[in-house]
Amino acid sequence: MDLYLIRHAHAVDAEEDPARPLSDRGRKQVRVVTNFLDQSEAFEPAEIWHSALARSRETAQMLAHALARDAVLTSTPGLEPNDDPDAIVRRLKKFDRALAIVGHEPHLSALATLLVAGPDKTPLFLLKKCSVLRLEGTGAHWQVRWQVSPELLP
Image (cartoon, rainbow, N blue to C red; front, side, top):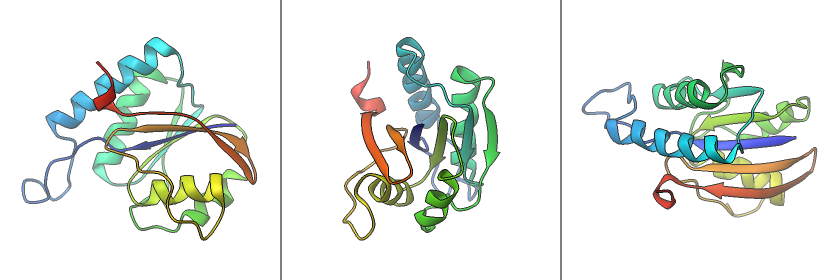
């Protein structure tokens, strides 16, 4: 199974808007990443899960619109910044299609570390804003395929 872990793009400060939607910079980050993924044909999720927070939902919507129009978008509990990644790991065991998860730090780094290295490990990953980490695996056997961040792309 292919699993894409995506940190939401840059959002406005809470002082500007408490809902923290994507900023202009964040929308540009998503466009840069979607252009790259579109050219590489390296992003093909059947579903895109996202947290209920505006910045995650908007990032997921932009990804789906640009790259995965047939993917099912789902607001999914357990994807907020400080949620326990074990709940998502349990859900992944029952899932067998390519999946993208758009979420937050430190949750995504903890989830990736749990999948790749197991429990009780110091986080091995850091996902910058709008970074995509592709894992491949099932059950207890996951490996990193690639990672890309918008600042690395033209």
